[in-house]
Amino acid sequence: MIFTSVIFCPAAAVMGAAHAGAGWFSVLFVPVGLAASVGIICVGRKLVYTITGFGLNRGEKMPLGWIQQIFFVPFFLLYVILPLAIVWGGVFGIRAASIWIVRHFL
Image 1 (cartoon, rainbow, N blue to C red):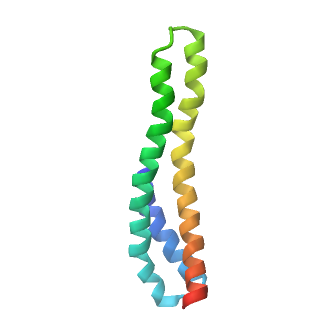
Image 2: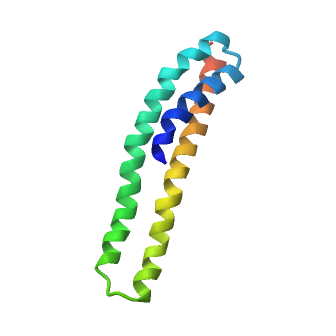
Image 3: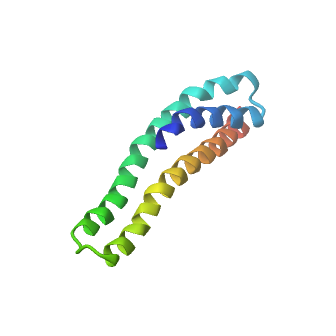
């Protein structure tokens, strides 16, 4: 899911720049959005696997039974929800940053 930021971040950068009135200069924001999406992928994957890996490794060492299942559920939910939050937070952040850059510098 984190890899979808490669598609959404450049599009958000262009739409934000066009929304702010950059016109044809909004095309110049595609490489910036692409570079930011690669950064989101690198940082986001490490963050997700660090947080969820800690809990899942601890859960494997517990004795089997209901306590292991209860301990596993919050980390599974983080594994599902955290990548979505990282990607969409990055997309909205890039859109807001491109609007701010266009309004203050162009």
